Image (tube, rainbow, N blue to C red; front, side):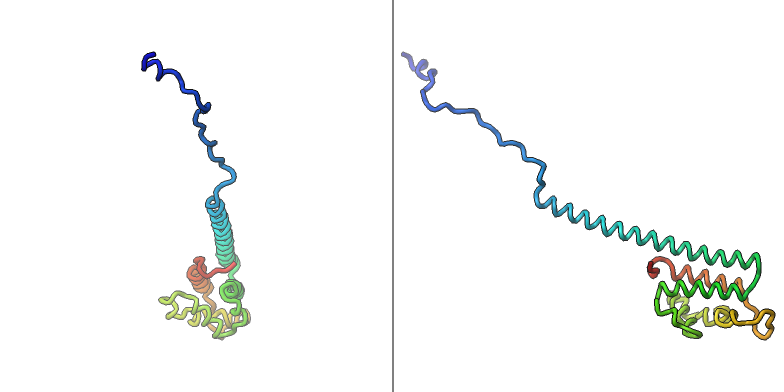
Length: 178
C-alpha cells in the first residue's frame, strides 16, 4: 500500500457531530437594566403628566380671572355704576389674593392695600399704586352713597386698568396655585 492510500482511509474512532450554536437569546424576560429603565420612564411620565395637568388648570384659572375682569368692564360700559365696579373688582382681587396667600382674606384697610402693592414686581412696588388715589377707592367706594359729592368720584376706568395691570403682573404662572 502506498502512503497516499493509507491517509485517505478514516481512522476508526468516536463519531463526532457537527458544531451546534446555542439558541439566540430570548427577548423575554428583559435584563434587569431594562426593568430599571422602564421604571424610570414610567416615573418621568407620571411627573410630566402631573405637571402638564397642573399647568393646564393654572392657565384655565388665569383665563377665567381675566374673563371675569373683562365681564366687569363690559357690565360697567353698559350700565355705569362706579360703586358696583369697585365692589366687584375688590371681590375679584380678594379671590385671586387668597390663591396667592390664604391669609390675605383676613387683611383689612391699609394692610390689604399694602398686600396688593407688595405683589408687584420690585420696580413697580415702589410706586404703591393701590395705596394711591385710584387703589384707595377699593376701600371707600363700596360704602359711598349714590350721589354723594363729598368724596372724589370713582374713576372706574383707572381702577379697571390698575386691576388688569396687577393681574398681569401677579398671574404669570409662577405664583398662582390651583
